[in-house]
Length: 207
Image (tube, rainbow, N blue to C red; front, side, top):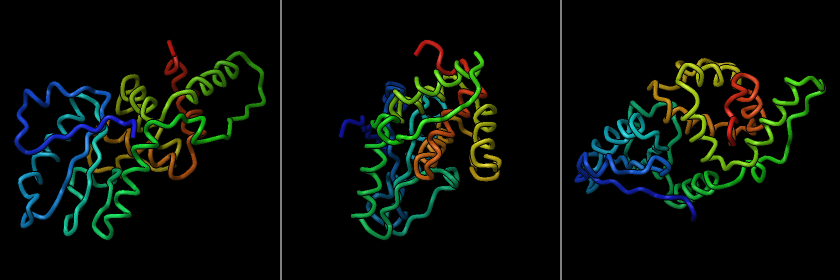
């Protein structure tokens, strides 16, 4: 509820894809070639990958029974229906709700910094501005204001691991989806916002 859901099938042509709004959430379905979804298997993953490059969409694979994670989505967020439809729907609903939820409501903790220098005060102010955004809005802000190299720095500072070692495809929008949701799942949203504000203080400019 509340999240825009864009539906694209194998019959969608390039003109229709180009008119998709960049604020949406794009769900791409994957399934084995031998079942009725076979007409939707390759096109969405290829088109979704291209859309993520062109429109900075949230591209989220949805895995059906018997399917595997497409190579281009290895290491990224996906919704798994393979073991249980109920669990898949629960995970899908949780993801969509999280995208519209204010970070203040998801994470009650605040970053505590002792110094009272001007630099630290600006960093705290930046943190508070980001907290007023929804998770989806923050994801869109990061894709608009950072490049892939800067995102890799944030990833390493946050998780202590290189993004290139964990994500198969070097794509800003797809990696941002995983960064945001992994931060939520592992309770490091406070650290994510502070890392963004510390490394890139202008990220909150104009908010």
